[in-house]
Length: 130
Image (cartoon, rainbow, N blue to C red; front, side):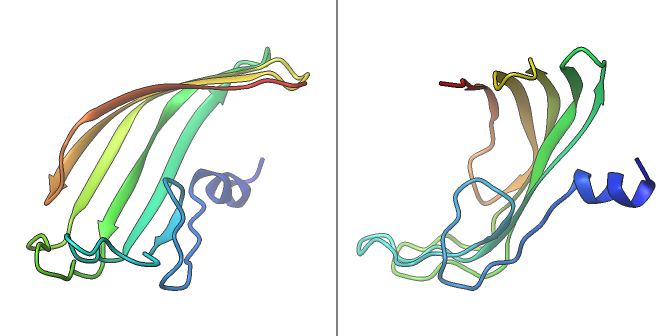
């Protein structure tokens, strides 16, 4: 794999038009509407990243996370002061049996969090063929 292909596979950021919502994936996060009691959240840029090493038997181990940066302020009567941001990083493990079964486990610790709750997350995702 060339360096150019590797770089393309590491980070894939898609910018979306304002007003569209795309949950928890890379790209521009906008809002179609807000809650009447809390105001409207600002728009943000969110990019996932991952770097792994394949062992040739369907197992990939690596590191991944995300970068989140709010680019416009919240608005409304209960709007938060300032723009939020967060960085996350942690280990990833993926298994693909080559027949459609894929299991991924990720742990991510947030760092440099501003104007939003800080935390850790662990999750397992499975894709099962039918």
